[in-house]
Image (spheres, rainbow, N blue to C red):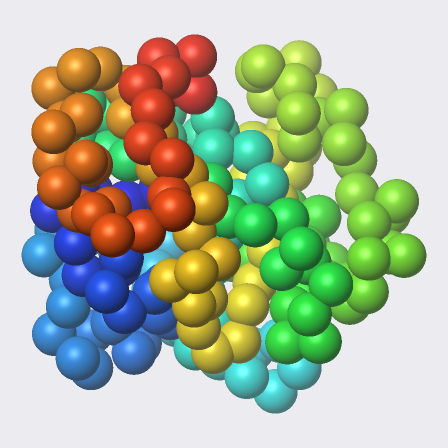
Length: 182
C-alpha cells in the first residue's frame, strides 16, 4: 500500500526499499508510522537491515491501513505477482517485522508455518497477538521489478483516472475495490 502520489514513480522504478526510495528522493508522501519505522531501522534479518528490504503485506486490510483510515481514499493497494514468493531473495514473517517476537522464514515450503486463519481474518481483535500477526510480511531484497506489479486497487472512483494515467503502456489491472479498505 502506498499514497497515490507515489504511484507513477513506483510504476517507473518498481518497489524500492525504504532506504533506497529515500536515497533517490522518490517518496512524495510517506504514510508509514514514524515510531514503527524507528524500530525497523535497527532491525536486521539475514544480516540485512529491514529498511533495505521491500516490505509487502499478505493481507492489505490490516492494522496499518486502519491506522491511516483518514487517508484511505488516497491510498492505493498494489497486487503483486504471487510467483515472487518463489524467488531466492524473498523471506516472509509470521507478523509485523518490527516486532521482536516475529519470526522469519525462507522458502515456500515454510508458508505452512504462518497463522493463516489470523492473517486472512477480517478483523484481528479476536485473536491473541492478532494485531502483530495480521501484519505478516513478505520481504524482498533489494527491489520488486515493475513487471511484478499486476494490479492497482483504490477505494473509490476518486483516483480511477490517476491509476489509468500511471499504468499507461503496462499490463497492470486497475480496479476500484472498497472491500479492501475500512
